[in-house]
Image (cartoon, rainbow, N blue to C red; front, side, top):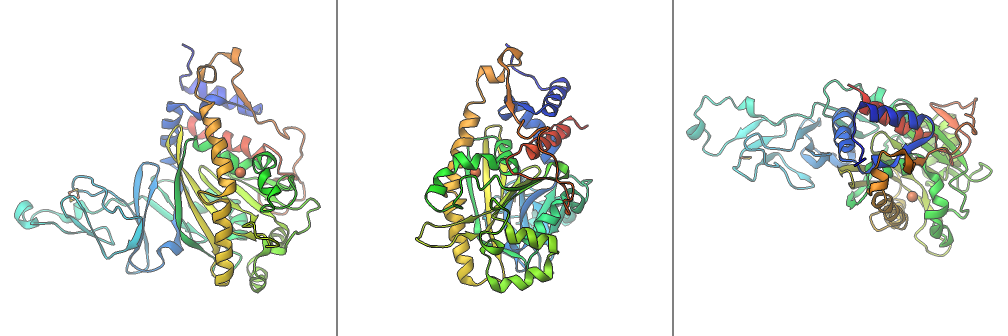
Length: 445
Ligand code: FES
Ligand SMILES: [Fe+2]
C-alpha cells in the first residue's frame, strides 16, 4: 500500500513541490495532515471569533468555536471584552448553549454551578454542605482563552499565550482591512446574526478559493453574469491587482477592465464619501473609488469578500456589502462556515437593508455564488480521497497546478502600499504563498 504517511520527509517534499508551483492533492483529505494543522496552526495562531458590534452592551454574549474549543465571548459590566472556554469547571459540560444573548451570570445546565461575567464561580448548589467552607472557589473559575485582541472592531483570540501581537500577525493586511473596516469613523456593524452551515470539503480548498482564485469566477459564476446580478463582464475578476502579504495573507482588488470605476466607491452612499476623505489616505481612497470587488484570505481561515451584487430586479443598481467568514475545519473533509454580513454603521437603514439583501442573495447560505462555490468545493474533496490521489507513487503524478503567472507576471514596482502587488487577479501568487506559509507552520517545532 503506497498511501502517504506524514513525516518530516513528506512535509519537506510538499515544500519543495510548492516552490515549483505544484501541490500534492492528497493534502486535501489526509487525517494526519488535519491533526497537524490543528496542533501547529489553529492552536497557535490568531482566530477570528466575532465583531465588537455583536456584543455592544454590557452582558451581551455570543458562543463561538476555535475548531473544537468552545468559546464564550462577552462584554462585562465594565465594558471589557472577555473570552472563556465555554466548558464548566465541574464536570466539563458546555456552559452556555445559546448562540447569543444577554446575561449577568451563567448557570451550568448539568449541576447548576453559576459563574459571573468575570468567570468567577459564584454559586454552587448546596456548596458549603457538600464541599465545606474551605473549598477555594477561585480555583474553579472559568478558564480564560489566553489571548484576545481586536483590530477595527474585529475580535481575534488565540489559545497560545505566546502568540505574536495581533498587529504584527495581521501586518500589511491592516492597511487593506482599513479600506473596508475603517473608512468611516464609526466603522462597520454586523447585520443580523452570522449564518452557519456545513460544506463537505477541506478548509484549504475554500481558503485558497477566496484568497487567490478570482480565476474561477469566469466559469463557476458565469451564470450570475448572464443573469445580470454580477458585473457585466465575465472577465471582471481578472482586472486589477493581486497582493501577496506576509504570514500567508492575501487580497485581490478587482477593478473594471480599464481600471476606472463602474460605480464610485462600490456604490456606497454619497453621504459617507466625506468620511472616506477623513479616514483614508489618498492611495486607499483611490483603491476604494475604483474597486469592484475585494476578496481575500487572512491566514489560516478568515476569508472575506466585498463585491457588488444585485438581487435581480430590473435596472436595480448593484449594491456592495462586506462579508467575513471563517472555515472551521471539523474534519479533513468537513467545514462549518460562519458568515458575517457587515455594513457601515452610519449608512441609512435603507442602504443597510439593500446591502443585506444583496449579501443573502449572493453569499448567504442559499446565495447564488455561494451555491456555485460549495458545490464545486465538495467535488474537489470527493475527487481527492481515492487510491490514486492518496498514493505516494510518482507514477500517478499526484500534483495540482498552481503555476499561473509563475515567472511570467512581474510585481508592480511603484506600488505604494503594503505587500507585493501584481497587475492581474488571475494569478496563483497568493495561493503559492498561502501554501508555503502553511507547510512552514506544519514543519515548525
Ligand atoms: S458540569 Fe457544570 S455544574 Fe456540573
Ligand atoms: Fe466563488
